[in-house]
Structures are given as C-alpha cells and as structure tokens.
Image (tube, rainbow, N blue to C red; front, side, top):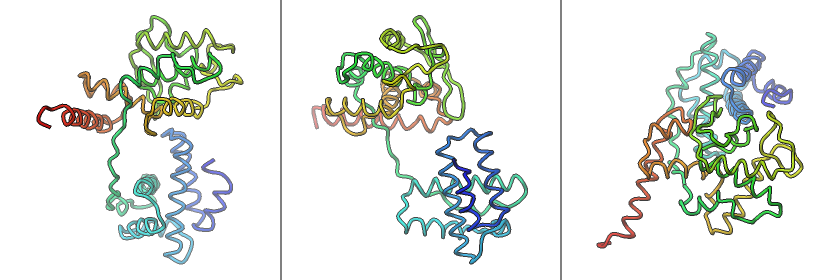
Length: 319
C-alpha cells in the first residue's frame, strides 16, 4: 500500500513529522477524492520521497514545511538533473515532477506553502510515441473465434469475447474484465454503459458481433455466472487475470507474425484508427474512448496520416 508503515518509517528519516502527516493526507485525498489507481499512488509517493531525499542531502537536515515554502525553480531543476544522471528516463522524470507538483498544490490549497516554484519549471519533453494499430484483416481474425490456440474450447470463446469487446467497443482491458453478467451487453442491446478511468461513465455503441461473442462464451463457460459476479473467469473459476489475455495475444502474435506492439491494448488503438480511417468524427471517437481531452484523441490523426503516406509511397505510379 502507498501509505504503509514501512513508507512512514522511511519518510521520518528524510523529513520532519509535519511533512510525513501532509503526505499521508495527500495520498488519502488522491485515493478517495481523485480516485487514482493504487499503482499511481505508489508511484507519486515514491517520486515525492525521492525529492525529499534529494532536498535532505541538499539542506543537510530532514526537510520541513519551512524548506518547501522557500523552494525555487533551481531546486527542482537540480533534482531532475540528478535523477537524469542516475539514469531516469524522460517519462519517469515527467511523472516525478507531476507528483511533486500535485503534492505542493495540495499543500498550497491548505495555505501551507507556495507552489509557484514548481510551476515555473518546464516539464521534460516526452518523445512522441504514436499508437500502433493492428491491420484490419488481422484484427478481424483475432476476434473471429475461429482460432484454436487453447486446449479448452470455452477458454478460446472467452478470449474471443474479450478481444471483441476491446476491438468492437474500444474498451480498455480493465474495463472489459470489470463487466458482470448484469452489466455486460446482451442480445438486442444497442449500447453499453462503462465506467472507465477516473470513475467516469461513458456510453458506447454495441455491435451484434459483440453480444454474439459474449453469448457464445456464456453458453460454454462451466461456471455459474450469477448477475453480479465477474463475467470473465479463469480456468479455476476465479476472476480472469489480464495477464492471461496478454499471453493469449502473445500466441496469436507469434502465429500471425505480428510485431510486439500487437497487444490487447492495440485492439483499442485499432478501434479508434479504423473508425477514423472510415470517416469517423474525432470528437465522437473521443467520447467513445472516454478521453478527457481531445488532444489525447488527436494522436490518431497522425497515425492515419502516416498510413496514408505509406500507402501513397508504395502505390503511386511515379514513386
């Protein structure tokens, strides 16, 4: 857990009790009010702890609120430079700075510090990484339920149903695995209400092929699928682990000669990219994916443009 006693003991070494108490309050706030994932909470606390350790070394004594009040942009730049020297990558540095800013903003709202120094530091520029969708024909084959990579037929149907939700509805794998028989789309349903990141709800259209895949799995599943139990099960009857779906995709990837980027999440990328290439509206795709910002969705326009240019280079008569 992010606020474990071990973490508390470590914090006492590098900061005064007022900081320790403030961090506990901040983590509680992020978990209960902002509903951040446990891994995010752990990463944020770890980043702040590293910064406090740096400041302790710099100040020559455990850090207190007094030290945080007097922070200047050069302090944050020095921390980032030290982390970079230790081998931290740009993405790690950017997340670390985001966590520190979040903590200081939390303290500023409580009237305890001024967070202006952190805000004046430029976030390390992240390398732009474009989503890598799976080609249409391969995506169709993955969700077809005509594959035979598993020894047990119902497991193959289960995998096909999960993959169909990812590609047919643009779900994240965690969203698909959170479904119950009561919340999953049924034959005749036109839409699915899903709760995604940040506990935000969205409505996504459901194709008949999606409900057909789910019904095929339910008919073959050997376990009792009561209304509020997990829809997708492991071979022993417990909730399906996402790792098993990743391993299933690994087998498919090997058989089809697909690159390592062909992951379950790539089916969600494929959903967006293929919709866009067929004339889908960017704002509508944003809503379907559950992106809070349109800028997160706009990256798919670059993917689509890249594919068009690649096709042009390969097929133009004057190439």
